[in-house]
Image 1 (cartoon, helix red, strand yellow):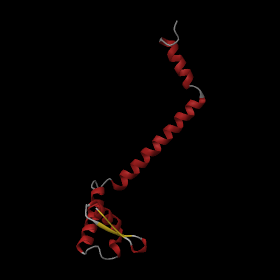
Image 2 (cartoon, helix red, strand yellow):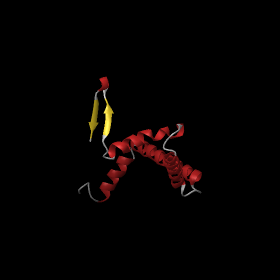
Image 3 (tube, one colour):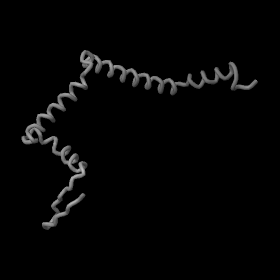
Image 4 (cartoon, one colour):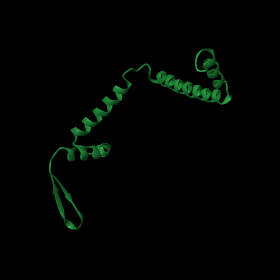
Length: 109
């Protein structure tokens, strides 16, 4: 009888999983899954009541940017937007004048 069909095949699979090192690997995987589920549960408990948590963060960041935009990005609290503004300026298609060493200037498209 072919050992890959019927009862012999199921016995072979059970025998392979009955080895101790397979059980250890499965046990470690179950611990990792339960730990990740516990972390998700704790996160849900901490912000579960506020379903718009991410939206509130985004609105606060947007209002801070708009406030800096109103005062023309002057002030220490608006320094964090400098890199973003420089990238926006470069992407805008305007000509940018760059000062190089020894007083050489270069104008790009």
